[in-house]
Amino acid sequence: MEKKKLTIIRTLICNKCGKNSKDSNGIFVANEYHEISITFAYGSDLDGLKYTFHMCDACAKKLIDSLEILAQVGEVGLWE
Ligand SMILES: [Zn+2]
Image (tube, rainbow, N blue to C red; front, side):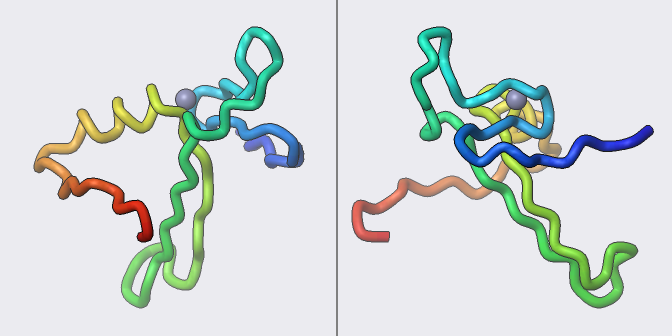
């Protein structure tokens, strides 16, 4: 199956579900989308590759909820 390549810059698209960052009024709601980046290191089957993609809040929450062991959680500081 051929994967679609992200080419639109003025909106964000969830790579998991395909939902985009504009609400029903066409307003850009980027704060509900998250960039996720994974760099695979030596020894990995994907050694040397870096994957970057976006997930909407709902898909990110489903991913977190699916973890067998709870993820580490912290509050985001104002000047982080
Ligand atoms: Zn999604």
